[in-house]
Length: 395
Image (cartoon, rainbow, N blue to C red; front, side, top):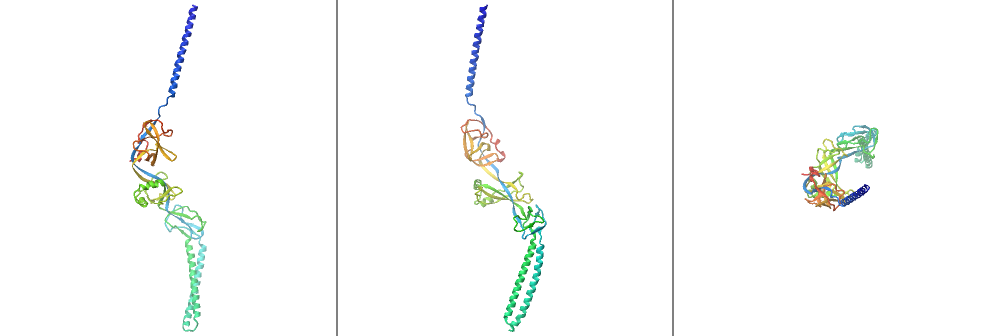
């Protein structure tokens, strides 16, 4: 009995030992396979890929603009004086010649009265001298007296006449200055900020004008175009000269600060034609009729110029990135990507018009390119071009 128990115990020990060996062996195999799996490369990540296409594109090129009145006339006094009356307020619409304010002219009025009385004295002196000349003429003709006396009398007459003219001129100058006491609008337009009020002393030498009257019947919108776009734009525009090209430009729109479009279309009328050395831009001006006074001097907006592109190569904006001033895309060949430099003709909303570097049928990674590098393998996911660009811009 003891022998059997001893034998069974040994068998059990042997069995357990064998089972442990089997478990350890299986575990080692599993770990080895797991290690082999972990060392294998991960599968390529999926990326959306679009096929480069060509289309006709109708768009609007935008340029920030500053609005000016067609005439901003500074109002300055012709004489010095205190403001005694104001006939208008800021924002009033006035016509050319309308009274704006009145200056104190009491002293000038007194001077005018004095000058007028001096005219009377001077006229009396001329009359007396004339009588003397008339009296001496027949006496000289009869050789009763020497002609020296007549010459002296005529000289005195000329002197009194000169004095009379001077007195009249002085009086007229004072009267004109009194008239200058009424300050009038030099143009038809809108009264701007009034820098002086009743009681203020104003002078022609003041640094600030009394106010500015802006003729806003036509508003001039100034905008700039960089040199590269200027050359490209006008090289494609019909016309032999810059003047001809400007005349043939289509009507332009003005987008206001709130995003709305001004109801009247404008016309590009002139350009400096010279590149500003400081900014590298060329300045243009477009005129807009402002019949309802909606536009004001000093407003800002955006000029929208219609532009048509015929059969151009397009890709999504999200497919491009910039590096060291150059524009790049990741072009797809089979399941690998390669960096490609392109030249951009224009950007419209979220679409890029390609001038050089891609042709119709090429494939590029459409988005998510920030972590990519040339030579990588990807899992291309064909994506419709229209889902990534502004379809409204395509005709």
